[in-house]
Structure formats: C-alpha cells, structure tokens
Image 1 (cartoon, rainbow, N blue to C red):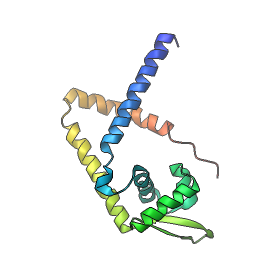
Image 2: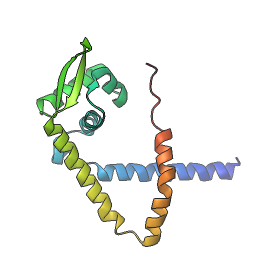
Image 3: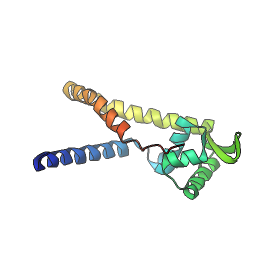
Length: 153
C-alpha cells in the first residue's frame, strides 16, 4: 500500500470510528433517565442478553476486574435489577441473572433506541437509505471481527 492509500485508509478508519462513537453516544440513554452509569447499563444488558452468567464469565465479557465487578453487581442488586445466587454446579462460584425489573428496563431502553433510529432513518433520502442498507453487511462483518477473542476454557 502506498502512503496515499495508507493515509486514505486511515482517514476512513478515523471517520468510521467517530461516526460509530457519535451514534453510540446518541443512542445511549442519559443517566438521568435510568439512574445507571454506562458501565452499569452495559453490565445489565449483558446479563439480560446472555444470563444467567457466572460472575467470572460476566467479568470477562465486560472486561472488569473482580473488585469493580462485585461493586457494580451489588449496586444493580440493590436497585432490584439483577439477582446474585450460588452456582448450583459449583457452590464456590456466583451466578448473576436479571430480575423482571431489569428485563423491563432493558426492553424500555431497547425500544427507545429503536424508536430514535427509526425516526432518523425516515429522514434520510431514498439514496442515503439505500447506501446505508448496502453498507450493513460490511459493518456487521467489522463488528464481528472486532469482538474480543474469548479466552480458552
């Protein structure tokens, strides 16, 4: 790749990263709406989507060290959004699962995000909409390739 091509690819990468960051921030509910920090929200979403999870698996998925993970799980437990229990297969390990209230909050946030995107999609021109739809497979592939590698079991 020549310097010009490298510069162009770097420009594309920077523009894409900025656009994704701005989309993500724009779709994130404000803390005042949920009372939760972005880290608490992320943890709750993981528990709703992939739970019940062993505490260690949740920590690995979220990239949190055990002390921080325990603190956040305790906060979400006090808020009534998750429940912590002993792993039935290994009493030394803890499990975390979403409560009905946690699932309802997740569903409300999901619906609000979908509604916000739908409101903006209808504002696009037909050409812009078609370009976005055509780009989805490449964006989905990038997202898949950027997922953190799972640690060997």
